[in-house]
Image: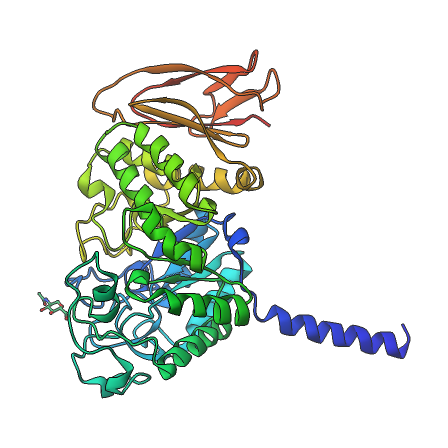
Length: 473
Ligand SMILES: *[C@@H]1O[C@H](CO)[C@@H](O)[C@H](O)[C@H]1NC(C)=O
């Protein structure tokens, strides 16, 4: 190696080091991930044992180091991404993180900047991506004592005080306060600039891979267009974001999804709740799929979920965990980027906020039936991800009680009969993608296998259980 090539290689090493320091991930890359959603305050205190929390409306003690100490638990189920609750310093009692006080400070209850950075580094070593929840709409509940908020300390940074009362009126939603939380005026040039610069600071400083955005429909679309263009696409190289538009109408959530790239699929959330949680007709899935085919240019970029921190858990509405398993089977393999709320794997059944924000410590049971079930589902998605990401969800059989579909080489059958009525469901599937003579085996029971003959194979569901067939290796 002569002197000039040596210098060139050194320069390249330095350059690649620099560019590698900002690694954001795009929408198409995120489509291959499966996300585990957790609240930092509720997930882990670090040691194996923590005190039971006596007041779920306040801090319970979870930390970034706690999360770092339980990555084996998350990774054991096959998840390769986490979404964590907001990390910035909050006003008193903001255990959930949605009450910002100082955007440029990390919430000391969760740890230090170094702790957060170290959590992200450890995640990246394990190829787990990190998505952080961010809020642009409001700050903590300080009524009109604006000087208490570090970055937005002048009355002019906010809209005039009024309350959101009409969730069908964009003007009311954009200009007034949600739960009396001071409503930022994103059109104020200082506010706009701080929000944009802070986003870049947060992502670059902590090397984040994606963002979940809170309360998207409470801010005007011009702000989102500008943030997307200048900041997310421009300065952050097209980082993937998934926004919360808490609404069951596909065309409504698409108004925001088409701007920022991804939104949570609330319409499908309601459908899944109806068909699995209430045993309503499976045709609702078909209809929702058709509707969303027509509305969304990229329905694969939607975040899909059964539970989150804002709604009663599935098992609170429907105690039959066989139905929950079917809903999970559908969600993990169905269209979209699946998001599983922490505690699902331990059959948590909390009601509305804050009861759906249980502490997980003392319950990291990797031998529970549900943990093992989750692990089979998510690891199978992971092991077949190239095939799944390249294939549409194609319906293969449907009745009121049965919905079966394929994603590439994975065949999925779900039912909503539940475990109390032991109904045997038998049907035959025609699918030309499996080679003649292929043996398909159910991921949940290794000896439950069928053979493909004349492009057909038989499926039998019993005890209200779902099945996932993959070709035997
Ligand atoms: C729980 O915490 C909230 C928030 O700080 C507080 O308002 C409430 O009084 C507390 N409840 C009990 C039973 O201590």
